[in-house]
Length: 260
Image 1 (cartoon, rainbow, N blue to C red):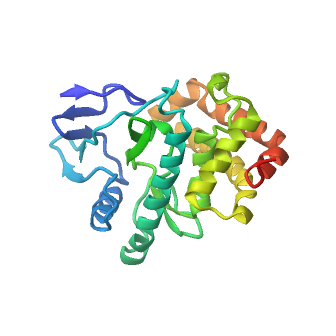
Image 2: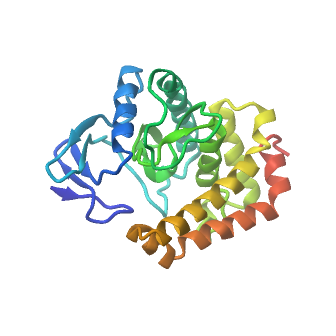
């Protein structure tokens, strides 16, 4: 087996065209979702193949390039952003009927949010999108999937794809105006009406607070992975970005709707 690089070192392994990765209490619900996506014609997600003798889930491997930070030129391109927005829209649309045909009360990593319009991916970021050149062709890591409104997933997508962040490594994306323009373009390609875009800035703020709270709560309950996240200051980074977005709330809200 070949261990893959990424956020969980030596935990995700590839054997041929199969991926073995840690399972959780939510994995059965995720596998039901992945099975459904195949029948619904959304073929850009892995297929679920069950579990191995060690309790790890087994998924098919999606060929292509996945980029972590710092992003490659292709991953940071407008073409990658636009094709990713189309991919998210197709994924969301495919999950609408999943909610209608599968029982409520399934176990997900995150609690369901109302209104449950779609199954949110929960972590729609460049590091979970598979590229062929500068075109998004696949979506991976559904651990954080959960029922919720489209806007909840879109808020995090804009945070990552704008990116709407105050992190120090954003030179390739230009100033805040340029990053807002990227976020607006994501909304346009996704097909979000202008009237629904301005409120997304509050969604980003709420999403970042929820992420910081989740890290703190899980760490307090003894989750070692989240204890490591806290030690590395991940929750503080989210809160710093939240404060940055709050300070720039007016231009971001305006810029998601208008190009000037």
